[in-house]
Amino acid sequence: MASERGNTVQDDEGDSLEFQALENDGELAEFSRNSYRIRVKDRDDYTVNVEIVERKIADLSRAGVSFLVEADETFAPGDVLAGCQLALGDQSVDNLDAKVIHRSLDEDEELVVGIQWMNLDEAQTAVIEEVMLQLRKELFE
Image (spheres, rainbow, N blue to C red):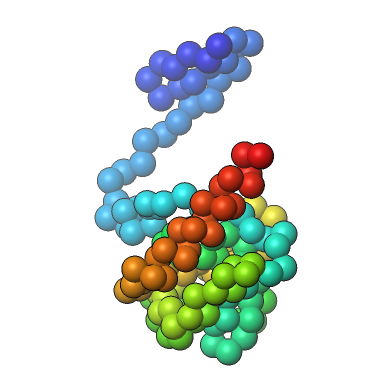
């Protein structure tokens, strides 16, 4: 059983890991996640159409998606992407506006761009939440 002392966590075998507290930085709040995400990278029928190009979704959340990009594609944090379209299996959501939040490597070392939806209406939100619920059920089957 692991025990915790201050900023150090030690397991039953005596191995320990020390944590360093982060300074309270205003930028950290900008990148905090307020909703869970589900990996959908292995699903070919989960795509987002951004700037007239269909892109494979890596992760899906109620608040946005991350999608795979090539190194030469330019997306910068703060960019606004208008008129995005989501294809989520047999469901779709049109006319989504999004803001680029990050451009980074995912856990597979692939380049992804994370976007956050802006001004979702109730119908758009309902479709995304329904898909998220179905995906969550599949994960726990």
